[in-house]
Image (cartoon, rainbow, N blue to C red; front, side):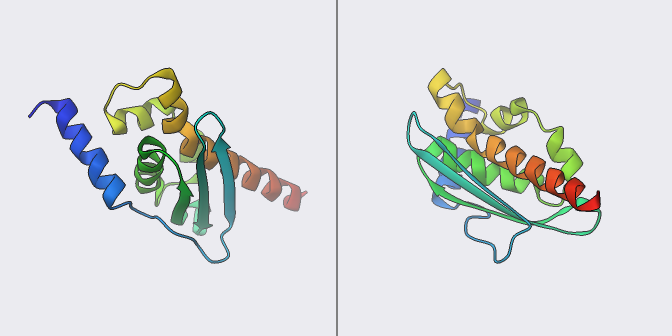
Length: 133
């Protein structure tokens, strides 16, 4: 089996059995965005623990297989990481997890969850700074 076929099987497994799908009660961070070009919707909710570590993370939404699978993979990647780690997360890490070639249009689908995650974290950190002043 070629590596692209292996990645396709992994993607299909995530599609059928998404990880961290659902809602969190009283999240510390919640952010939602859409990809208007294809209608994808991703919402990410996070519970923050000590030292700004992601204690729990869930996503929900709808859209194409790429947007939903990348959100599932991303939530697995960042669980138990610090918010500082999230700030340093690069789009290449998401694309490497997917492991398949994507067109320009599909790049937006694949990166929507990263955009939602980063906006949520930056908003949270900004509000945290406002509270401290």
